[in-house]
Length: 230
Ligand code: SF4
Ligand code: SF4
Image 1: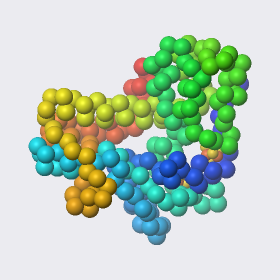
Image 2: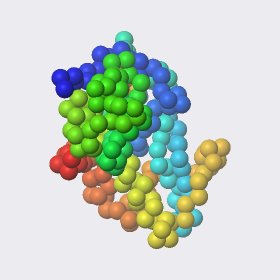
Image 3: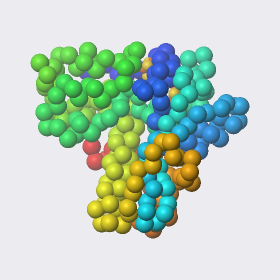
């Protein structure tokens, strides 16, 4: 297959976000705040899913969202912070890769894992391999084609899925072992809490060492490891 995805920098995905929100992780919030300060931009970033742990009395947040639409870092249809753009921007239009890995016979709805992009229509790209609702590739073939077509974007989505998986897994283990007693904080009550990131929470309660937390954050090592596994 000769086609390779190329971003034509139309800026469309930076102007409209699903639910008007760009999802962020905590270290991205810190970086964007710093860059916005330098550029004199006011950001509207809010914690999204937050819990108060009754055992440790610590409030933590699983994810953040930026409610500036269009993105204030978009200048003349170009990202002005390209090297520091969030992971979600790096992976777009590939949003999730796990369903391909987890399903032996991928179905057509696998393509719902792609964002709406002006220069990408995965159904069109794969049309010769589609009959009805079935994609005629096994998962290994599909993943290798996705890697070939979407290159780094695919790999970043891979990294994102790995982080999502790890975060959900840690949360579940802590709950199952009764090590935490998390209660969701209503959005209207958020201002009553001092909220830290989930990863800082893991470090504070001694569940993960600083090095392990950094390893999860560290894009390069995680990406490389996952790549070797594909
Ligand atoms: S919509 Fe697609 S082509 Fe346009 S900027 Fe976003 S990723 Fe690039
Ligand atoms: S950070 Fe850059 S790539 Fe991401 S939405 Fe903003 S302008 Fe687009």
